[in-house]
Image (cartoon, rainbow, N blue to C red):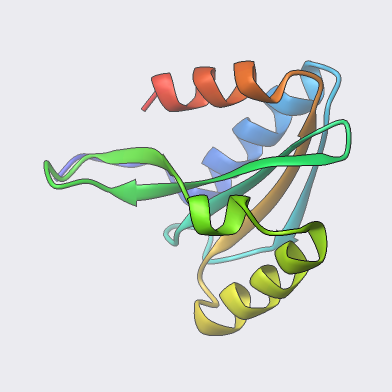
Amino acid sequence: MSERLPASLEVAAIMRRATSEGGFATILHRGDPDRGVISLMIAERGVPATVLERQLAADFRYRWASVPSVAALEPSGWRDWVENKSRIDPDCWLVELDVADAQRFIAETTAAG
């Protein structure tokens, strides 16, 4: 199994990256500081683009994967998803990012593993 940064440190780095590129970042639900699923709700200038989750792959490495069922929701559906996700999994981290170029941010994030 691969080593992983504490979730709180990884979330802080992602948020800093988004804000350093002129975007906005906020924590919608603060999970376990060391572990827990990290979900990124990525928007571009207020328009939802996708949701990425850090998931353990079959080769026991963590990778970012899109959650298409959530990405297809209307903005009000995202709010319901946040409430349900945080209730079901209190250890999860839910982070909202609003960036200038969502596709580039997503590509760079998923390429980093």
